[in-house]
Image (cartoon, rainbow over all chains, first blue to last red; front, side, top):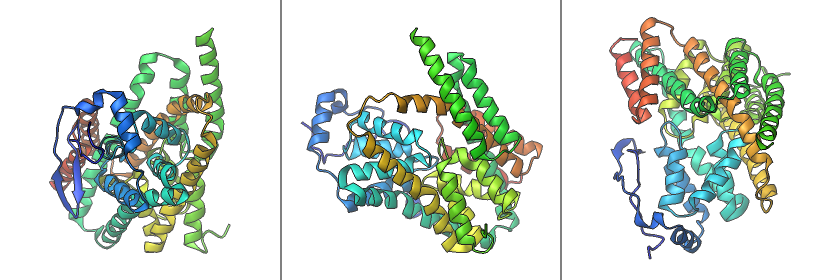
Length: 231
Length: 177
């Protein structure tokens, strides 16, 4: 029986952690821990793990947020499900699914919902502040530096290069998300996707206006397609 | 609207409202941020917008922190704080309330329905984000090639995105872009 407090190696991918300005690698392992294969053990471990306090919530979310380059979600999943054992993978997915269809920054929503599950409103606020606070202070520092030095030619060149790469990453994400849609070969969702792209990206219409039209249409189309799939 | 009179009020009302329409996360709201910050209020120039996007993608933490940078450009530290909280807190509280309402009624059909309906829209929005930022930045041939190369690398491999950003920065420093 694995004790809840025993820390397991973080599996998959190489993860980069930033702490006090120094970048270093965490231990990497491709093997998943033996306990992960048995659902019953995980359930017991999660049940036996004492719920986190306010301070633990704040620091856990601060840590995953500061480690999270290019998206905090994988780090949040690792920390909550594998490291701290506060939730099972299914519970995590369910919580994230809820935060994903609601508006606003998903991972921020998740922090509040997650924290409140354990410690009510104060817990939600603690996790929220942990996730948003420390990186916000860091970004404020960068903003001040940018305001003072943003016009220096060397920095301009570096930022131009980073900007191109960042757009490239976004394009890659878009294509990754599009693959399942393309594989299903359903025309209506693809048409809606292109229409929203054109309305926002080319025509530059206001977001509210486009969504107030597109969301009801997409909902209607989804319901119709599900009905047809059932019959 | 006297949003020009008090910049903090303008930031809070702008981002508070925007967050309620930010389906698909912060990166899907980039075009709207650009429309409001550059075209409507002239808080930032096109170039500054491309810069703050780059800085926000390079920094750790949720991508939504681009609003911290926009807020700073408008009203310093107070603006940065106000914009961040306005963009993050209302929807987080909304998520908290909805999760409380949903408790016990698991297996409800409409959350998954809504999610399926929103996926194509958020992909379209994120595609528009890429277009808007690339148009705000320099549109030289080397820049376009670098963007496409980064996209191909990120799509085909599992390289940590941070390395791709840093490589882009090095190429920029070398004067390629």
